[in-house]
Length: 154
Image (cartoon, rainbow, N blue to C red; front, side):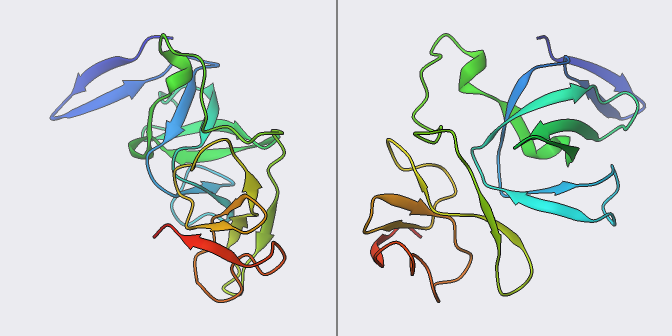
């Protein structure tokens, strides 16, 4: 589970270990292959843990990961160490029942559906009246099937 930095020319190449848990540092495009122009499977919310399945040597700035049972690619710049890799394995950033679902919003983007968490998760935009947290990218229709918006987070 070590992170190794190699100086190549004027750039550092980061290599992560297989099976390592990383966390997204922003809302990340989860792609079908390691190229910026490739199809987006979904958008992974900020603060979400993902598992590395391939190091970065083969794809330079991209990591092959698994997320919600699918395999794809994310840019390394948007990954950081996870709390699960630290001395404190307990994390409130995981869904209560580990059941994360997605929907396609009006712009055609895949967005995490409202989900129950013990505390406010990173990337959430609203808390719904039924206790779920929404990751909606617009205010229109947010929490509409969850009793409306209890409070806006962003």
